[in-house]
Length: 574
Image 1 (tube, rainbow, N blue to C red):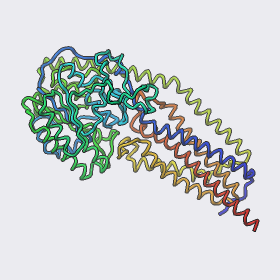
Image 2 (cartoon, one colour):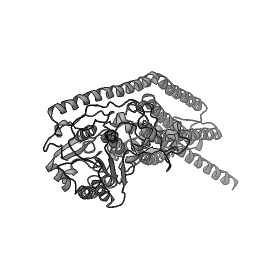
Image 3 (tube, rainbow, N blue to C red):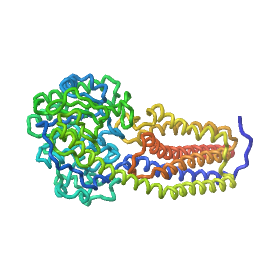
Image 4 (cartoon, helix red, strand yellow):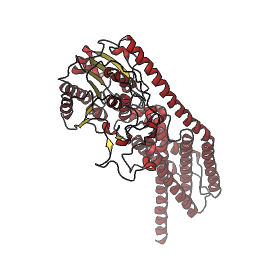
C-alpha cells in the first residue's frame, strides 16, 4: 500500500541533509568505536593506591613449617572437574581439600596477582588480561627474597614473570617513590608516561622476581621444566600451566576436550612433582578461575568463581576444612608455611585452620593479618571514596553537556523538519529503530550468556565480540528500514523519512551513551558491576554500530535516489 503524497523540499536539499547526517554518523561511529575499544584499557590502573603505599610487613618471625613450597596454578580449572583428576585426588587424600572463591573480574592476570600478592583486582589495578605494566605490589616473591630464599617458576604462559618485573635500582626504594614500568611504549593507553627508550630491549636494567624462570610452551615442556625445578633448591616454586584454560575457551567446560586437557595437566603435574618429599615439603594447588559450560569467564557465576584449593605435605593439617576461603588468602597461608611475613599489601588472611601453627603463632598471625588488612583496606577505601567524590562533583556538568547536546540536536531536527528535508514517520521509526536495539540486546542476553563478562568464550576484547552482535543487528535494521521505506511514492519523500530514522537512531544511541558516560566516566578506580562491565562497552559499540547503520541506510537511499533519477532522465531522453 502506497502512502499519500507528502510535500517535501527540493530533492537536492533532502539529499544534502542526508549527506550531512551520513557524515555525522561516520564521525559518531569513529568516536564511539574508539571509546568501546579502549574500555578494557580504561579499567586498568598503572599505579593503584596500594602500590604508592609502603607495605605493611610484620617483623615478628614465625616457625617455618615446610622446607620448600610448590604453588601450582592450573589456569581455568573449575572446582567440580578437579574431582576427576587422579593425582589431585591423591593429594586430597593426604592433605586438605577445600573450595575457595576467585575474585571479580574472574580473568587470569588479575587473579595471578590475587594469588601471589593477596590483593584482589578491585585494589590491585590489574582488572583484565590486557594489563601491560609490571605490578608494583608486594608479593610472595618479594617476601621470599627479603628472607634470603630462592624463588623459581615453570610455566607455558610467558606473561607471569613479566607481571612482577622491577627496576634494579628500585628494589630497596620506599614504595611511594617507585615509578611504574611500561613494557609497551607504543600502547596509547600508557602514552602519557611513555619512556623515551623501549625498556623492553635486551639490555634493559630490569630484575625478574624469579631467580629461575623456565618458559616451556611445547608439549611435555611443563612437566620437564617442573621436574627440573624440583631437582633444584628454590624454596618457593610457582608452577603455572594454561592448557585447561585454552581448552575451556575453544570448546567449553562441558566438552570432552576440556576434561582431556585437565587429565593431561594432572598427569604432567604428577610427573613434575614425582620426586618431592611430602614429609619435608608442601604442595598447594589452586586455579585462577573456572569456566562456563560453553566456555568463558570474567563474571561471578558459581562455576567460574569457585575453584579448588588442595594442600598436602609438611605443615598441612590433613582433613582440615575452611568454608570462606578466597584466592587472596593463599599468599599469607603460603607465607606461614615458609615462616616469612605475608605480602605487605595483601587484603587476605592466613588460613590458619589448614596449617600446623601452634596456638600462640596462629594468634600472632591473626593479629598481623588484622593490622595489615585494616591499614590496607583504609588506603583502598580512601582512594575509592576520593574517586567517587570526583565523579559526583562533575556529574552535574557531564549531564548538562549531554542534555545540552540533545537539545541542540532537537533544535536542528526542528529546523530540518520546517525545511521539509526530515520527516518523522512514527510507523517507520517504530519498525526500523527498535529492530537494531532489540536484536542487539537479545543476542547479548541469549547468545552472550546473560549480560555477564563470561559471555566472551574466546580470549580477546569485549568490544570486538560485541561488534559481531552489532553487525548482525545492523543487517536486521537495514533490511527493516528498506522495508518500511518502500511504500513512499517519491524519492524525496522516501529520503526525508530515511533522514528521520537516521536522526532518531543517532540521537537515541548517543544520548544513552552520554548518560552512561556521565555516571561511569573513565578511568575506573571503582570497578563497575558485572552487568555494567558488559553494558558500558555494549552501549559504546551500539553507538558505533547505529552510526554505521545510519550511514549505510542513507548511502543506500542516496544510491537508490541517484539510480532512479538517472533512469528517469534516460527514459525522458528516449
